[in-house]
Amino acid sequence: MKVDLGPGIYVLGVSGGVDSMALLDVLRRRSDIRLVVAHLDHGIRPDSDIDRLLVQEIANKHGLVFVYDQANLGPDASEATARKARYDFLRKVQRATGANAIITAHHQDDLLETAIMNMLRGTNRKGLSSLADDKNIRRPLLHVSKKELTAYAKHQQVRWREDSTNTDTKYRRNYVRENIVKKMNPNERKRLLKLLAKTRQTNKTLDLQIANLLQVVGQGKRMNRRLFISLPHAISLELMATWLRIHDIRQFDKKLLEKLVASAKTLASGKHIDVNARHFIKVTKDSLALTQRERY
Image 1 (cartoon, helix red, strand yellow):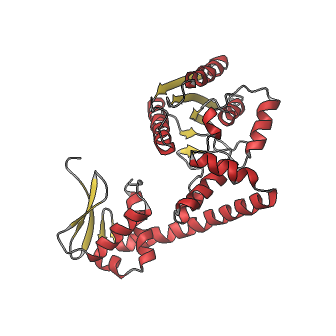
Image 2 (cartoon, one colour):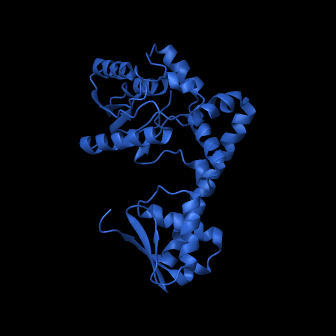
């Protein structure tokens, strides 16, 4: 199985499921890669400690560094809560080990599921290309289907654990997986993958154009309000989202974005707009200033 990954030190997130265990088996054979096997016990299932023991056993067998933590999220934890806890843990391990990047075992089916979920949520163009490979989080299996991964694991006699919650359709991802992705025929799958690839390229072009426009409208944490007001609404939304992301504010939805843009264009000078618990936008006649609260 082809994995496009350069030499270095990596934190590999391993849940114990077939995807991550198969990737662990592929990467542990590479002499130019040093792996830190990281496992987070979310504490959602009563038998989750068995997953940890399996991952630890395999890591020890191959002489790999193994790190784990327990989150104790409880059985009612949402997908978003579990995901945040997982990535917080992986980033903590990366900082502690000085690793080049984090590796996850997201594959082609995850790519399809995420895009469909984001379409159902009504997210903007970024939702169709949100699951991608970048320098900080490497996802080298996005070209590999779940079927191919499972076949590899069986052929190599890789051991894994089945998560009993993976078929529980009360979780949106599981619903999408069981009722949409698994029922797509090869041509439908191919067409959607082609659309997602085209959207990724379009988004790269648009992101570059928006970034160039931001250099004209803004300077650091300050934007020219007169120029911002003159922009069409759709462009204002894109510019506001990019401005926030540049300053590491990523937890916002379409409703908040609409509120920020409308307020930025209509509020009287001297007012401020709440962004989150840590930041607000200070409004003057001529400028919008992204400001961090002294206490939060």
